[in-house]
Image 1 (spheres, one colour):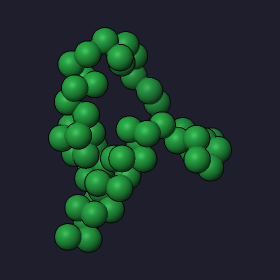
Image 2: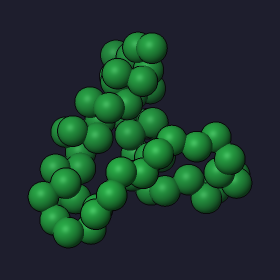
Image 3: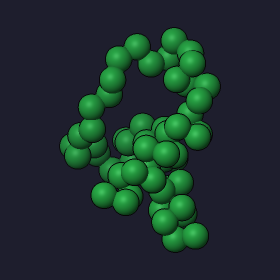
Length: 56
């Protein structure tokens, strides 16, 4: 649960420009079916943020 909250915080802090643009027109629901290396960049970035935030 802590990772999920930190991941969400990563989206809020790192992806302000995306939220304010027309790039996202719908909610992308979480899936565990991504192929290795195919996870969207924004999700990878939020994962790294969360991991570093928790381990800081």
